[in-house]
Length: 193
Image 1 (tube, rainbow, N blue to C red):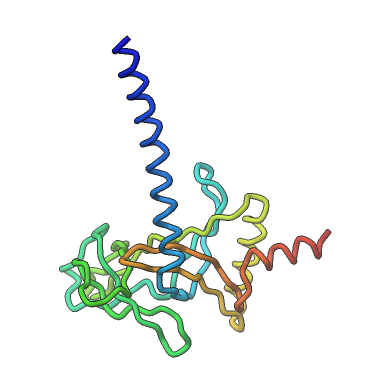
Image 2: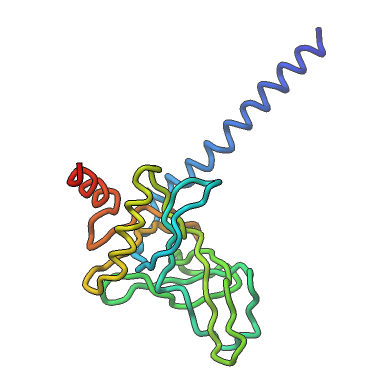
């Protein structure tokens, strides 16, 4: 009888932990969305489909390369902290990068080194944790086409809204000329019906 109580107690604890972990992850994302500082990152298009993770638009950003004092101090895959500022139009730009958590500022995001030039130009390319914008499967392909077309149009401004708090980031939305891409795709779909 005692063994059965232990098994039941163990099962309940295991179930609780399995619910607690995703709940904590969701709470952290929601907390960043509510309390984080919002940055606008100008974007560029890439392949939108991953058969294992669903439909999304892969994003790359204009603020993704940075000149460093010595390229030999940086390695591919290295975790870095990107200190952010904004330009005159309100778009995110890199103020500095460091291998240590920056002190005295909350305007930073954790990223990684994607590429080091190693040719004397002292430039590194940065990978951000918010490089995929997931969408409802039926809207992902039209959104990717809309997004790609917006990138070709030099009069259009396409950017991602990202909330950042204590180095963590959540991609909130992708906008084309200030209109969320989900709305643009919805308008195109209803206009074509």
